[in-house]
Length: 243
View 1 (cartoon, rainbow, N blue to C red):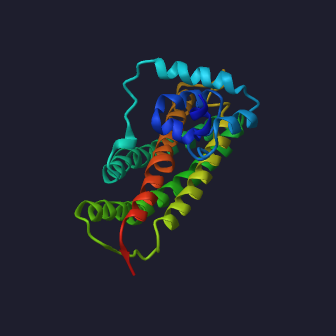
View 2: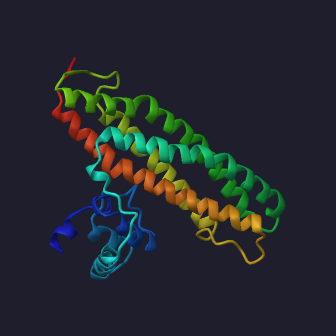
View 3: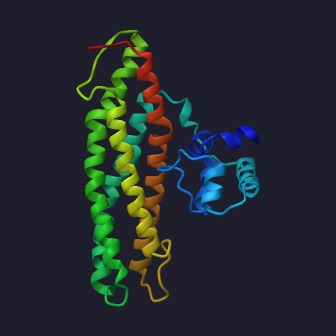
């Protein structure tokens, strides 16, 4: 138990993704703010640490096929996975959600003015995510792949134009924090994606898709913040990088 209390919640989810459900249930951010300990989040949210530990133990006892151990994956494979699964998902879902949300506020905005703010926040997020993913695909991920290759072949690397991997990672972390905050606002405005009683089918589908989008984004950010980024920084320290 003491070892568990010493870990950050990001480390706990990285070791066993099933624990993420406990944090989701209590609205605890394990991806953008995964560097806090269980004791710290318990105090922040006025929760009992022993209760959280019991809930974590219970989910860990359950059989769940969706518990891939991403920590053991080579970094280049993890980067490929994030790009092909999560980046592609974002690119495919954004135009669909834009269409749904645009229709919603036009039809239901008079009775539910919060839809205008939801649409505004989502459109801002869509634009920022598009640029964010391109920076990862063109700058950070290629460097990760170069580091993996250099380590495998025991070869030195020329220093990248951004100096050290810590620099693009710091930018990515801040942008993750920004998107996490946007979706906290969207969740609040949408009553945690629960449509009102007078909601039509389109309304319900839109909120369901928004919730799915947020859940995928949380997992996407978790894989980067809590696994890919720390391991990339660690790998860079092990390599010989020339000026």
